Length: 200
Image 1 (cartoon, rainbow, N blue to C red):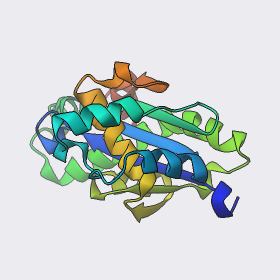
Image 2 (cartoon, helix red, strand yellow):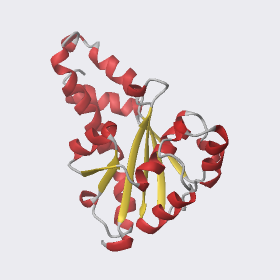
Image 3 (cartoon, helix red, strand yellow):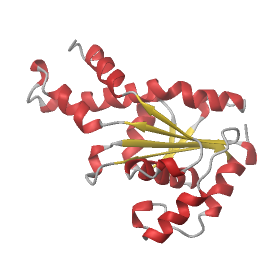
Image 4 (cartoon, rainbow, N blue to C red):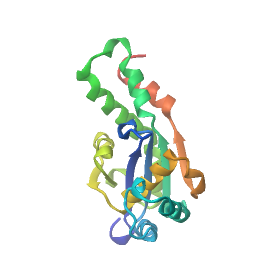
């Protein structure tokens, strides 16, 4: 798919006041025109919703809407800190800093393979392959792209919208936005990680 009909995808994480907590992963995926149109409705607002004033945040929430055909929003509950802390306390890797990177990479891979079907379903409905998608994001989500073999690019309109989605879920504003798919695989993520790391 090429030109203005190509698929855009953005991802961003949001924490609970501590950036590395990664409580939620916001994902926006849609055809180019739909994503650009929705981003345009946000005017000149910052790409980070946390930097907006309260009236600006209310304005963003009132304008965020996904039609499920040309654009979708997904919010995944990550609870990364608690999951990884729990894994680290397992007897065989306690106090082993050298395995921290492996644990985080395993977390990233499990998250992406668990949600891949939801993203792929939308892409295929627009005759696009999952493997051809490019994730717009910042450094916090590059690890997710790397472990699944997807291309990555800095920022973009889809990234901006995904920041808004992640923030709204973290702050309990998601029920005011039309058509967000909420996913909570935290128990499944933990069990898969324990199996991969041989800690069952």
